[in-house]
Structures are given as structure tokens and as C-alpha cells.
Length: 437
Image 1 (tube, rainbow, N blue to C red):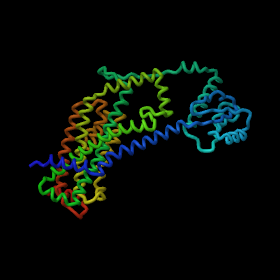
Image 2 (image 1 turned 180 degrees about the vertical axis):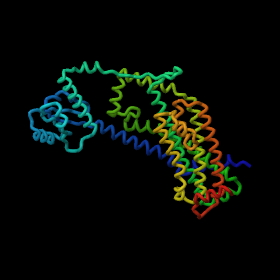
Image 3 (image 1 turned 180 degrees about the horizontal axis):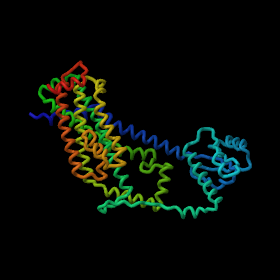
Image 4 (image 1 turned 120 degrees about the vertical axis):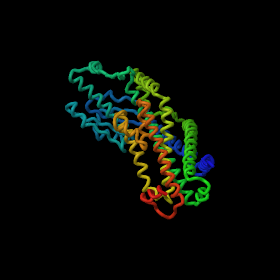
């Protein structure tokens, strides 16, 4: 009799009714959103902090450079020595004093600018001051050489190389960026899902083994059915948890934004204000349009179908190995010696995807690793957005399925023997012996 549906149901209900599962399912989004809200609120307070910076310019070159903003007020000091200026700034409790010492040439100014303050100044403040000073010095040097800013701007040339395949299909740099984002997100999601819920399967097997409940269950259920039931049931519990996180996280973000008066979609940070100002430029609008077009060019049907198959295949392959490890040991401490052979291919797949697929998605290294079953779920998902022939995807998927079937047979052999073994730390040699039983 096939008990697999009953085992899946039991495993799923056991997981979702577990107190720690329920607590972490609802508590994790609360913690993450709370941290996000606190950071956003504190960042907003920091960005709204009003600063007064005094400027002592002994050269006269930077007289009109520093313009007041909503959060920063610049005060020009004249006719004062450095000591008197520092004393005045301390008395007024200003944020700091920017001192530009008198020099004989513009070239010497770069090493004669100092910022005095009571405490270490903000890096963003220093970067802004350096940028303003550098821009003015550049203008002065150009004027000294007889070159006007209008001439410099007229000489600026932007090159945008058009990209087109031999078949006439047009593309752009935006296409590569969008493809990279989608491929990387898919591969990373699979990597995290395997790590989180693979360990959950392994711990579940160890708990039932140590509690001796497994001895009762195994008397009426085949080991392979029990193992597959645990894998599928835990997977469904993980999907349930992910869905709850997504829905609850979205609702909480809106609530936190309303309570703390934080615009979640557009936080009032200096970086985003600069981005909004930049978007007003027609050239940037054109770039944004290119990204939307690049998104529309993605083979979404192929991506969705391939993601489902490779995601499920990769997860089931590694889950069977996690279940075998759980059956072979008595506690989580003993799992460390068997975890490295499982984690290494996953880590290697991520590194190959990040450092090789980005540079050459159709190169030898990327192609080979997209066929190796232990790395193909991650690497192939990163390659597909760049256009992978269907025969390569099909061959890679067949190899993955074949390896999964072998891994299930391999894991079931270990599971069948190891699930009833107690009090002995197994070795690789003993695991191979179990395969012959």
C-alpha cells in the first residue's frame, strides 16, 4: 500500500503546527520590518539634522561655491585668523570649520584644505565639500589655461555602442543588467531554499531517529516512502512559510511607514534625492526606458518554466542527500563531516554563476557547470536569461533528473540502514558498506 500521501500530510501538518515554526513564521517578518523601520527612521532623523559649517577662505577662490541647503548652512568668515575662527566656531557650537589656507598657486591648494570639528565629521559631508572644492579648482585651472567651461562641455562626447545579433535581434547594455539580476536572483533563491529547508529535513530525521518513533513508523512504511514524504512535506511547509512572509512583510511595511511617517517606496535620503534629480535629465529617462524594454525582451515563459523545473529538481536532489545524512548520524554535531561534500558544489555553483556567467554566459566554464547536476540548478538558472538553446536546457534537466533518481536510490540505501543505527559515529567506509545491504 502506498503511504506516501499520508506521510506527506503528516510531515506537513507536524511542521506547520510546531510552535517554533509558527513563532518564527510570524516573528521573523516582525523582527525584519521592525529593524527596517528603526533604521529608516534613524536615517531620516540623521538626514534632517541641521548643520552649520563656517568657511575661512584665505584664497578667495571659493567665495561663492558653498550654497545653503535645507540641512546645511554655510557661514563665510573674513578678516579672522585661524585661531580666532576656531574659537568663534567653538563658541557658536557650529558643526565645524573649513579652512582654505593662502597659497601661491592653485596646484598647492589641494594639500592646504583642512576641516576642524569637535567630533569626527560625517563622511558624506566631507565628500560633498571635497567635490565642491575640486570642481571649483578645475574651473579655475581651465580659466588659467585659457579654456572656457563652454568649450569643455562642447567637447564632451558620449558613445553608446549599439548591439545587434547576426540575426538582426537588437539588444543593449541594459539587457545584460536585467538578465543578470533575474538570473542571479533565481540562483540565489534556490541556494538559500536548499540551505534552510535541507537542514530542516535533516534535523527532522535526526529528531525522529533519536526519539525512537521511527522504529514504529518503519515497521509499516517503506524507507524510501518515508524519506520522500519528509522531503515533500517539508518543502510544502517551506513554501507556506515563504508565502506568509511575503504577504505579512508587505502589510507590515505599509503599517510601519504609516506609523513612523516613512515613505517606504521613496525614503527621504540624500542618495534618493540625487537619483530623482538625475532622472529629470532626458538622457537618464532614455536609460530607464531601455531597462523597461530590456525587461520586456526577457523570455519570461522560458524563465518561469525552467525556474520551476530546475528549482524543484535541484531542491529534491539536495534534500535527499540531507535526509541521508540525518539518517546516518545521531546528532547534529556528527553531521559536520558529511556537510562539506554537499555544500562545496553549492558554493562553487554560486561563485561560477557570479564570476563566470556574468563575464561569459556561453563560455566553456559556464556551459560545463550548467550540465553538472550538482551545480546546474544554480548555474543554468543564471544562464537562461542570456539565451540558452532549448536542447541544452533539456539535456541539463535530464541529467539533473537522472542524478536525482540515483541520489534517491543512494540516500534510500543509507536511510534504510542508518535510520535504525544508534550509538555509533559512521564513517564514509561504513556508508559504502550500507549500500550493499
